[in-house]
Length: 115
Image (cartoon, rainbow, N blue to C red):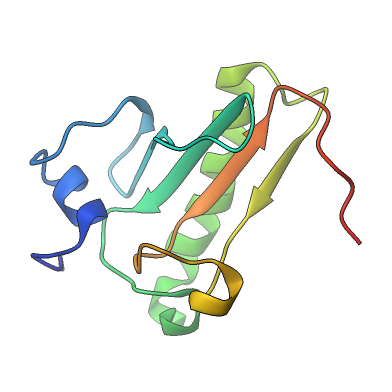
């Protein structure tokens, strides 16, 4: 299922170009156009799911694939050993701008400690 107005769905459909880092049948990873770190890749499900809150039990395997894809993307970028950060923003107050669930993978430099 896709949302005809969702920018990430348009990327999945090939209507908007993206710098693809990784792709399989269920997920797509591409470089963020406004990177917050030297390496900043977004991983999205090819199915439109607006937020983490919208995940259902039927999405359990897909959620696992998103996290496994994050590790694959880190390896592709060569940061799996030095370290990388994964972030999922949920809703506006958390900074979610595109309402299609996505995982940020950031690294390639020391990142500010959180907490």
